[in-house]
Amino acid sequence: MDVLVELEQSLNERERQLEEKTESLEWDQLGLKIAADHLARDKQKWGLDLESRKLELEAIHESQVETDAKLCEREEDVRRRKTKVEADARANCALKKQLDDQAEQQAARDAELGQRENSVKARELRVTAAATRHRNRLQELRSAREEIELLRKQVTTLTTSRKRLQTKFENATAALSVAVRIASWDVARWMLSGIEVDFEDFADKVAFSGDGPFLQSDLESSARELGLRVGRCGARNAAKILIVGRDGWDQQAIQAHLDAAGEDELFVFPQELWIASMLISYNPFRCLDEETCRSAVESFGEGHPVIEWLRGLEFPWPEFQVSDDAPSTALEQQVKASPLVRLEYRVGTTNGQPTKERRRILSEAFSTDDLPKADFRDGVRPAMQREYMQSWGSSSSRKRLRRIAWHLAMLISMHSRQQNLETAVEEWQADLAWLRKSYYSSAMRFRWP
Image 1: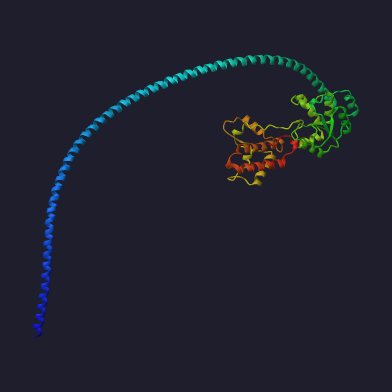
Image 2 (image 1 turned 45 degrees about the vertical axis):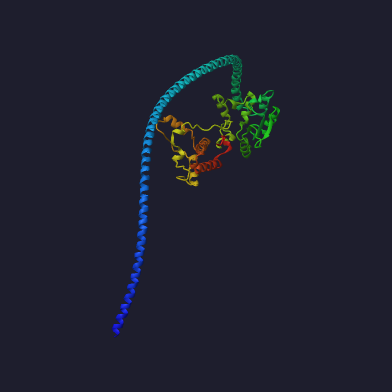
């Protein structure tokens, strides 16, 4: 019984589902019908559109054909125009070349004209210069004639003066030999009485130090009588004439006098030479170039204690002027290694010696009797090598000191503007200052560089 009920229920349920499916199918059929209607309408519509599109395409095709024809015509026109443009361009190039040729010809004509103008101007300048030279030569000729006339007069005057000086020199030689034997002031004063001395070759101020053979006071009185100013030995305003005796001379005062004289002229007269100079009325130091005169003057210094002392200080008696010129450096470029380099004197940061060692080497260079010979470049003659080494002088001499000082000064001058050698230049400058402080004396009478 239960099975039948379940079967009936199942059957009812299936009928109900079938009805639902039937109803759904009907609705689907209705949808299909509607869709078929829509499809038919769309097909009709699409058929109309397709026909319209075909017509449009045919019209576009006809338009494209017309456009292609026009493009062909335009391309042909463009080709014709391009051909014409190219022909015009070729014509323009030919015309430009013709114009360039004409411009070059014109430039050549202008250059030729400029050259002709310059040639004309040059000729005008040469003519003007020739005229100027002619006027200058005429002026020079007139000046030369005037100078010749003046020189003739000077020659006449010099000939007369030479004869007078020759006579004076001969008398001076005799007087100098006589003065050596004068030992009495009475005799000297008697010989000086009535003599008029021209002090143009001397100076207007004198100073004295020491007695012998005459008293200093007697010579001072005689100088005042001759119209000279008498100063003090060693004064700041040093007299250019210093007269020294053999006894009682003041070493410190004379040294101070040398310091005060500086680079000025300084005539150091032994008393006997001063009297002889008064007798001949001429300063014998002015004729040291004459061998006879120099020999006579030097004879007064032989054995004189002051002169010997001065020479020991490297005072270059009887010279009276400070040596101002630098030692000859003509061979410096031919020297590979100077005596200082041979002694291993070096400066700078790379291979330089310490300060103490450098100054020991400088002291050795100044005082050694065995100064190393410089190394020269190939081709320097032995005579020139000897000349160079002789310029370094003897040991501990003013000449040696002067040569070392000027050598350092030369190195400073040559390298002072090189930035990479600043340390070397500073050390050269410091060593030069030390050298002056250690060895230089005003008695040496040369200008320190």
